[in-house]
Amino acid sequence: MLKLIIEDDEGRKTVVPFVRDEITIGRQEGNTIRLTERNVSRRHARLVRLNGHVVVEDLGSYNGTRINGERIAGQSPLKEGDLVQIGDYDLALQAEGAANAVGPITTKVPARRPEPEPEEDDSDNEPEESDHTPPSLSAAEARRHSTSIIRLDQVEAERPRKVVDVPAEDAPRLLVLSPDELKGQEFACIRTELRIGRTDDNDITLDHRSLSRTHAKLVREDAGEWRVIDMQSANGMTVNGESYAQATLGTGDIIELGHVKLRFVNAGDASDDAAAGGGSRSKLPLVAGLAALLLGGGGGAFWYLNQQGAQPVAAPVIAQTPTPLPDEEPRPTIEDQAAANDTPLATAAAQTPKTPPPPRGPSMEEQRAVADKAIAARDFDAAVEALEVIKDANGQRPRDVETRLDEARAEQLMKRRLDDVRKALGDGKLPEAEEALRESAATKAFAKEYAALKTQVAEAKKKAAPPAAVPTSGTDKAPSAAQSAAAKAQADGFEHIKGLRYRQAIEQLNKCLDLEPGRAECHLYLGSAYANDNQPEKGAVHYKRFLELAPNHAYYERVKGLVESYENPKK
Image 1 (cartoon, one colour):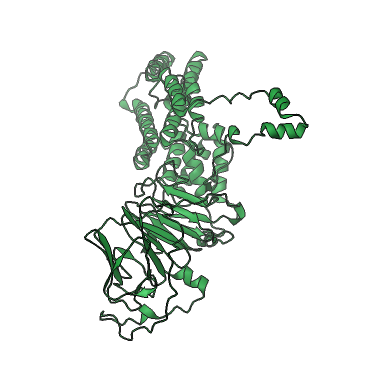
Image 2 (tube, helix red, strand yellow):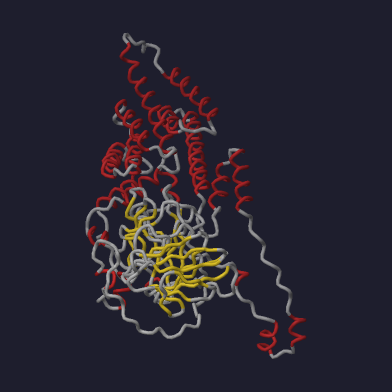
């Protein structure tokens, strides 16, 4: 298969498979290949397959089409290796598999003879002055503001590049502007090539359904400029509102990948959002803290408070270079050892013991199997321990593992609360047993134990009731019924939070508070549900109410710290 190599005046090359019988080239929308430099006419030229050969035809362009330096009129045959010049672009045909398919286009070309350009305009009705007016910007500005678009369904964006680390002080950033569920994330571009997409195998992962698995990549060219390249994504890419297959980036440029909008910010430049935000109160500590409080399930704050420490503000996400394994480090050769020790080579070889290979750690599949076995045995301590160490090559935990880890932590907490019920019953502390029982209502793995303890608590309440306490009306039973309904609404709300159904969780937890306004745990859960639903102000209200109702609660101090971080962010 033939390929068409296109090179601009900066030496940037794009390879396009010649898969059609006709390829049109021009500045106007609708061309197969669109080049929007000023010196390219709207419909400039076309390449046509005729009887097994390729013919190039100038379509009456203003600045003409040249083959090997000679301006053509009408159609002209094109051979592999011929150089076609359209404006500032050089094009060449090459058969697939040629040795230098993406090397410099070095066809021998006679010096271009200066020719007077024709005075007449194109046949279009509108004036063509903009078609041939030379740009007055400096070379750098012209390169910055010019448009070099090559639009084709199968643009080859896999040109090999040397990938190296970028010093942190020189690394630009990508700031996520929308949608709301991703807004505020920040990625430092610390390598010269970064892939962006929906799945975890990318350098920058944006989990949004409008993105392709690998949607685009960000590269730094040898000249130092950064470019974004569409990777044949389904929903395409725009830069500053215009569709591109690839584009050069500068500070402030807005990139849209599907429905995800990002701002590119060069190193040392402040983003508009950061400047505008100033000393305003940030919702990020509240969202990060309150949302995390319920990831562990049940009493909610246990996992976050014990695993994360007092760090409510989420750090910027940085696409990191995977740490090389120890056996990838260069080892001294036998010759090096002999030279260092001034020992004959044979002696050094005899004295050098053979280093055994490092033991291979368990694979992800093996780690998953260990976790599955622990979950089946309801050993959630072991399950949590196994799931916490499962990470991919980039140090990221797969999403399904993260979900299972949250569920395991929830059941881990449920078991502790059921143990509290048993202890409180044994100590005769019935109110504490009832409270712990309510907090363990969401368990699935220990449902039988929960049912049995519920029965024991009910029997203990009957025994504890004084004989003379015979109700004369139905009003005495009303509080107990309301408490039971509130407990059920709380448990239902918690289940919705675990399933990330925050609107349904808010509905159930508000129902819980309608039945029992002073129920502290409902305020705790409702605060987190509101924060996850992008309503941090309401979340803060319920957390403050929780602090008023439960000053002796185990999570009081940490919740207090989260609310203070929300109300008094660092300037």
